[in-house]
Amino acid sequence: MPNSLITIGDSAFRKSDIVNIEIPNSVENIHSYAFIHCTDLKSVKLSTGIYTVSVGCFYHCKSLESITIPQVNSISNFAFHDCISLKSVKFTDDCRLRVVGE
Image 1 (cartoon, one colour):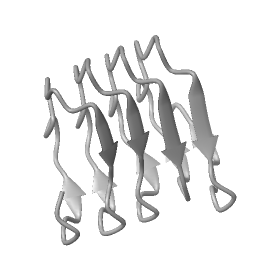
Image 2 (cartoon, helix red, strand yellow; image 1 turned 135 degrees about the horizontal axis):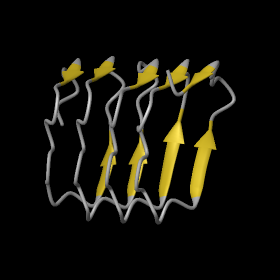
Image 3 (cartoon, one colour; image 1 turned 90 degrees about the horizontal axis):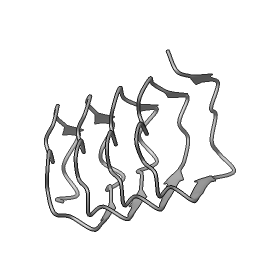
């Protein structure tokens, strides 16, 4: 992903075969279902510019094992629905999580 990217659109990586992803710090928005059905995705590191994990963002990412979440204020409904392999969720010290599931 280019360091100039600001937004990842709805279903942008739908059914992609990506395994690991580090979202660049330029990204401020990840729209709904951006990574839906990325069944090979194992690890994610979100950028420091993201404040919301959108609805269904990682929906049905069955291989997702770990995610690092910085500065996020909210995690929307179904963000990690059916992520049956998720073992590690790391919140950084600057995380401001206040809302889950709205």
